[in-house]
Image (tube, rainbow, N blue to C red):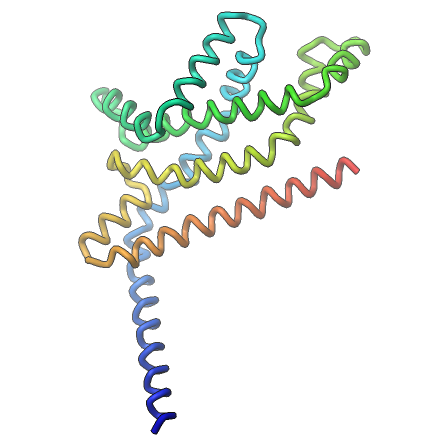
Length: 233
């Protein structure tokens, strides 16, 4: 009798799991819209435009008081205000011009992460011994050429770990676009959850989606770091 009861409990548990996963499978189709316009799109946009980040970095390193002041003010404002406030600022400021919530969120995320990436590059460049730049100039290179061929490659290697962390932070921060009605994954999940009264199921799917993306990117960064380390040996 005890074995029969145990077997019935196992069957009930299996039935519950089967029902849960079949429900998840049905609800995935409702999330495709959010997945299509979610973290990868936001991050590819503002991480592929590294020139602006490097420009802010060199503004910060510039001996020009004007350029230095512009970079300092920009970084101070971005780092001193919450990201959600910045996103709402662009949303209410640009929505009147007919710009979609997607692009308002993308612009807010881009400018927010630009400040942090500029600081990452600045710290990496300043960590390189100044003697290497002087050695390049002694070989007949201009300052810009020595910076491009000697300093920046080494600085990028040192910046890679914090850049990977910043990408992961930006990846998760993209969920804040839901608060301005952008059709991203978290917004679609909460909307569908309120309709079907299955919020936990949708939130679990979103959590797994973000977790898989973060783990994959972490693995990619670790492999890239290992490859660079082997090249230095």
